[in-house]
Image 1: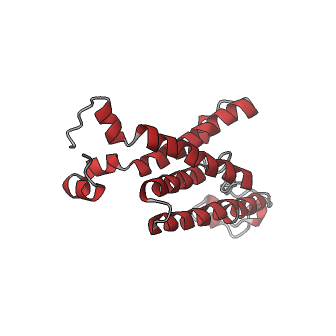
Image 2: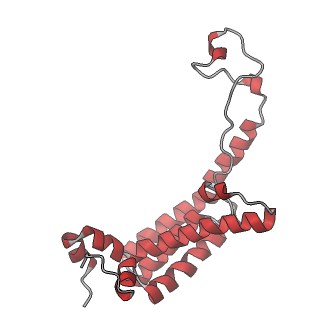
Length: 190
């Protein structure tokens, strides 16, 4: 018989963490969404650029996959009428909206700021140009990060990918702790 997560937490926190399939399948959805960006970069742009694995923005939204996957798994386990699912769904809507709204607008604004002439920017403190009283024609300024948010399509694809990965994983495979037990791996955690 499986021990409830609350009781498992009190006895063995690491075992409880590994038994939390809702968290793990949300993270798997996020990771696969992020990894798919590398494949998309390779197929569409015909270039191998592993740096895309650590960048925000792009197709699909891994944040959307993380939240919708975790929320769907939570609803599946706790019930879709549970107040905790309602809270998770509400947070999901806020993050998805911000990803395609506020964060995207911030990225577009950064793109416009980056296009401004260099001479408009005061020198950075501590630079050689900061000691002179005149503006340098080429002050050193790092460009702002532009790829911050997502298009609505990127958010939509990520938000569909999350439950499509998390729910089958949750139902068919279970948690990492359950997988370890099924594979005969002894973790010494209970």
